[in-house]
Image 1 (cartoon, helix red, strand yellow):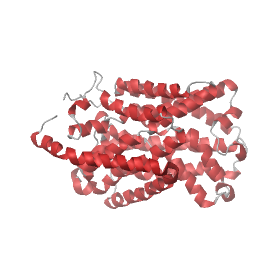
Image 2 (image 1 turned 60 degrees about the vertical axis):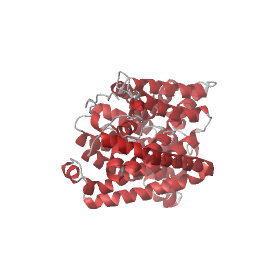
Image 3 (image 1 turned 120 degrees about the vertical axis):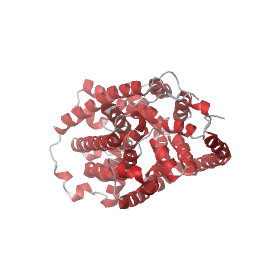
Image 4 (image 1 turned 45 degrees about the vertical axis):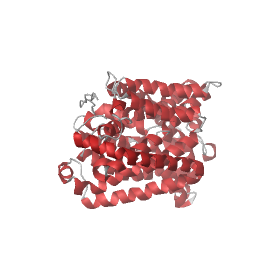
Length: 443
């Protein structure tokens, strides 16, 4: 196998654009209205609590990325700290979880149809998938530049929504009163915060580029932390506008278009929907394509997959692996799955595979003490035991809360897929061991 030449060429703003694009997506444009229905004027505070919830697994991945930065970061953490078989199982679940790709494309098509009724939504959704797929075929540097342009347009639109929207908010007292922050009790408030955490996840995947950035030990925690704080501040202010411009009854369960129609002129409203809402969905889609192949490439080098699958084009992109993720993402579109189902299914699977790299931190100090001690960003040993266990509780609740909506059929399909993966691991292991023993690159 001809190995791709990897150089540390991603800089701070490249990584920030990818991280911001990964975080900002369906969450703020879809879930804000749902959270308002759950907790009223508590929605801005629920975003703040969501930041605390997301911070736990994010800190775990940041500590790992600082200690052992590498391409395919999360995969390599699981491999080196939990075991090779576990790492491939994690990777297989990650591939399945990328059905979430279709949620961004379907959401894009739904907003496009709202602006131009009568569009063929299937073709629009499939088309935007193809656009991001092709952009990433031309290499990570090209994809990062494409991402930077979209993130700039997105942030400009959201800032405009905040600046103009805040001028329409006349009364801030409801955000300070217990009765209006917790209209459905603390249970409703916490449920809203847990839902909103979905809008803040994504920065952890910056670690996938560990070998492709400058000074990864410092850059990974810096980009992860800064992008999460920036997005959280934006979301809190957006929630203030979403709840403060119109009566709550008019915005509960609604997306940002309801208030945007009030604060913007018709022309600016269209620009906001296109430059804010629709671009946010594209940035999330593009960012996933930018990092998703790293783990598969590393798994090939470890002998879990045939070497020929890792062939790269002249831009250094493993196009077969990228095509696998494209097929996974486009299948729900072609089979007619709804946006809500795809988003919840993808999130539930993501919660499962997301546990693996977080739990890897538990073993870092014991299995790689040298890397732990030299890391620019490191946690006390006790915290490396406590934080992963807290993450298990949070993720476990998320999986439990998704069970009924996904239904037995969806879970049985996931179980069947998992069984097939474990069977493959059992059958492939002798070949993998042989490859590792002789130092061969393919069979």
